[in-house]
Image (cartoon, rainbow, N blue to C red; front, top):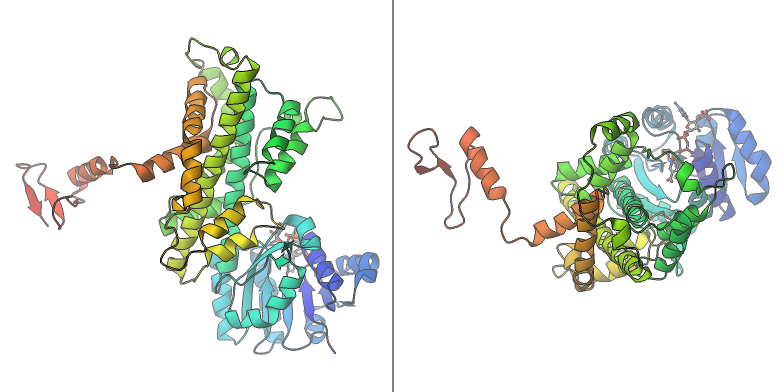
Length: 486
Ligand code: NBP
């Protein structure tokens, strides 16, 4: 009897997924380009389950029970192709190659098609939860053929995180759908972190709440409809003191945020599928501007105008009552902005589903994010309910779901006050502001796009449509300015 699954690529993610599989009773054949990693894993963890040591991909494939399942966990990009190229000639029709790394969904689509031509299944799997999740139960978003999920699904479900006994793993759609859903998850994660950052910055800059005090604010918020993993760990990071200086750790960490690319891909894909993911894109840009440290230092010298208001924020929020009111306003602004980022994320999933022919089920996707992953939040239960309605009655935009329309109505005055205060006192709050602008753009009776169309017609004869009759029109701007139907 051969091994149930092979894992190639035993750096932290591959090793932890292999251990998770072994702990769940599967026999796992192991391979890594550098054999020392395979030996290190077996030496340290052989007691956790059944591992088979192999030194080459040929040996790995020979160790497996057909139909074979090979999990590739090497660095995303060219290494994945290199491994696939070596693996494919060793496999038989019906075998399954799984890529659970952070691959770009277009590459997954390409690889899936190429392997399908050879009678093989290629399954791109989104995995969220980092190293700890990989070991103890991640959120798993598999794509690939529905047929491959018959064989692979039970195995993935057994190692996934559980939410009230339900695995956070379900087939989401064909070819690159799994990696796409994971990418959108990461885009939302960017926005979630940015709104937390903006809330912290506003409470500190305007209401003078120190990080230690804010730790308690975030703990309190974690008992509200904001309850989530990221809010929970915000309180832990904010109360951490630096060992070296005794100052709040957040004050000694360099204020430039890194990124590995999934947020950028989300913003780019939003543009490509025509979905206005402005909140997510702003979160990516916020990281970009944070990383322009030299430019920011120069700007501090150049932009001396600052703010001009007769009342200092410190006076405005000086009393305890005013401070508490402001904190509650910020909480509401954060919640409303967060709702917008989820609404945009699901909107782009809808658009991508149409673009790529994926029958994405939004309720299922929301369910996968309830445990194991970074954006796990109580809110996801409410999102699932919003998508429970029969097809045809589901909200076209998540914000149209009754619970969320009511929540936004409730938060709106506070949201506007916070964005106004940020602008008045010169505190950058790009995501609070752009989320509010998205909401206002959706609800506006008329947008200035009519003027944009007029301008485009003026300089480029791009034509326009009229509100009062069908057809396409052009004004003869450089002649007698009469209108013609084209
Ligand atoms: P890395 O992304 O650091 O990749 C290291 C592994 O790739 C090693 O096993 C290395 O072998 C192998 N490798 C490389 Br590099 N080039 C290779 C090649 N040409 N042929 C064969 N093997 C090659 O590992 P990781 O941090 O465990 O991440 C694995 C995947 O999981 C990545 O796609 C990553 O983005 C993703 N990831 C996801 C999360 C998450 O939260 N979901 C977290 C972290 C990472 P060697 O030992 O011989 O050098």
